[in-house]
Image 1 (cartoon, rainbow, N blue to C red):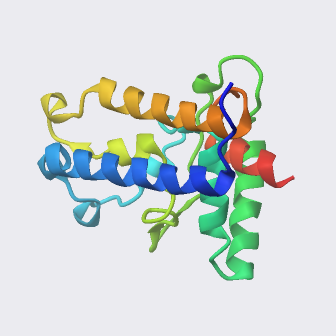
Image 2 (cartoon, one colour; image 1 turned 135 degrees about the vertical axis):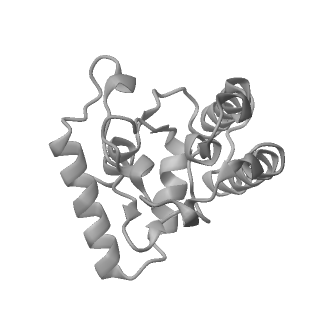
Length: 176
């Protein structure tokens, strides 16, 4: 087995992976989508508890917690309280098919938007946009391939593969 990758180096690689992926999605697909800024119901896709089931890896959870750590302490407390409420309200847990567990994203704030848009946005959120036609959507293989790269990064950093968890669970689990 190769030498483990430090978390610091893994976070740098994760940032680069996501930046490259965002450029690919933005340049190749997102120009065909409606801008979030012009949406009549901004945040509807992030707050739709029947739709959202974004899962993240351990290294992504670390990156998001670090992004949140740059916010004022009072904001952090409110966000982590919303994360706890989301886990409880939607009954999120690690049992069974976690991809069947939906929730409203606690990292979206009305009037502001995604609190981690620039600094820690998960791959499914980068991929998602308001496309008029399904023909305009990025192929699923792009997201799957990116998630495989992140999973390998996770394994190189932490030494084993861990199940990807719904975002609120992953953020709560690493904090408590």
